[in-house]
Length: 212
Image (tube, rainbow, N blue to C red):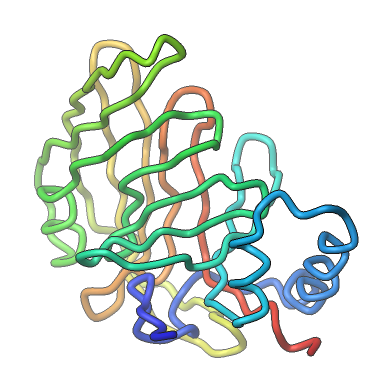
């Protein structure tokens, strides 16, 4: 399986790794398989050692580990053992299923251009949601992008220099702040809001296979 980046160019290029959590990740995954799996696809991906994405729900501090299921036109689909999924493109979350929030799609082209260029400015983003009645609604947000200072991150045991960039968004009912750490035009780590129920997610690539 080809291993595209989150931007998946390299597994060392995402979020500060907590070594104790990563060291135990493999055994935790194996432990899950002692129970009847909810996703045969997930098990097959695990056995194939597909790239893994760790998702931290900032509000609840709960963690889920997803595996890369497939790529379609630059959009990566990550699958959890429960069957939930997350879609990313160039490090930006562009969709989710089963994570409390029915984010069908997120259009973030304007935001992406500014963030990856490490440039200040204003941009629009659009979120399309599916509610409990299967009705689709699209919400627009006006966002202010502000580059900050450089920070040194420890990524998978290596250090990397990145600029911290904030994206402050609001509409008539919601306001939120996303944070990106960008190096050489690529997102090395990010905290991103997917909706008022789930809140913000912190995502990072992790290696869950060292225990094999």
